[in-house]
Structure formats: structure tokens, C-alpha cells
Length: 225
Image (tube, rainbow, N blue to C red):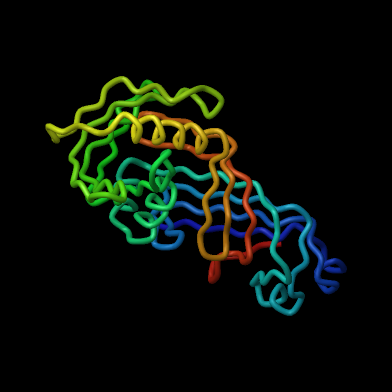
């Protein structure tokens, strides 16, 4: 069941001048760019808005804004998102990296997440590893632990179905890329860009606190002043 609420933090005088102290948005069970989310919250700083839209219970931004966001995604949300072309392209962009000899790309094919608790993430799936010289299909199972973004990711186990294994140079470069992403996690969607400040792994869900730049507020949702 979708629950949505939008609050424009302003008064009548500021509203007709196109000003607001902030905008608060809370949504449960909604979709962002076809990605299902259990919970999504936004709190903006002072913003310039279209005063005519406010009179009709809508919010239209006159320019991009900065905001604090909270995102809660359940295990099922994540696995559904992993089937989307948008998310697969994001993962491909994240996991394209350089070795000393070539550019390596990872193309996710069928990946599943499990969140059993105790900060653990179990990942199982199939990828195509493109090392430049060849494209190698690879099935794998990995158990990792993520205490926080300030601490290194711990790889408890990793198994793959190829007898040839993965070249050490590629593994070293991949681990380096993952650590760089952990230290500065950033991703961009249409009309929004996010820089993750906190990522908490819980049993069955992941909670993300992030700074965001938004070009628009979601449309067609209830509003109150």
C-alpha cells in the first residue's frame, strides 16, 4: 500500500513570493525510477518554488535543490531492482575499472542479495567479466560484511564456478575499486543525484542516509501547509 505525504514549510507571504523554508516528503511503498522502496524521506533546505503551483497543492522547483534523504530498501526491493536495465547499467558503470594492462568491465546477468543479519550480505549470481582480451561468464557466491562506510568491507568467502579462476591483477584492481566506492559512494538517476553518508545493513533490509541534489519533487502526491 502506497502512503505519501508532502509538506511545504512556509507561510502565505513567502509562498506568494515563491519562497519556502523547506520541503518535507515522506513516502512508503513507492517507486523511484521504477525502483521499489519500502520507505523514502526527503528534507530540503530553503527553496525557490512556483507560487501558482503551491496554491493548487503542488510543488514545482524553480532550480535544483540540496536535501537530506533516508531510503529503506527491503531484500525483495533490492532483488527486484537488480533485474532493471537502469540498475544493471549503474552496476556496470560502478564496476568498470583499470588494471595495468586493460580496462575491465563487469556485466551483471542474474544477481540475488540475501540479508541474513549481523551486517552480512550474501550475494549469488552470474556475471560476464570482460577483461578486454576475452569475455568470460562467471557464476559466483560471496559472503561479505559491512559494519559501516568508515570500515573496510570484509569478504568472508568467495566461490566461483570457473576452473581457470580470476587473474590476481583483476581481483586486486576490483578490490581497490570497491574500497574507493565505499569511501565515496555516489550515484545518479534522472532528476536526482545521491552521495551516501551512512549505509546500515540490517536483517532483511538496508537503510541509506544520503545527501541529494534534486531537480524536481515527485508529482501527484498529497500536500499540506
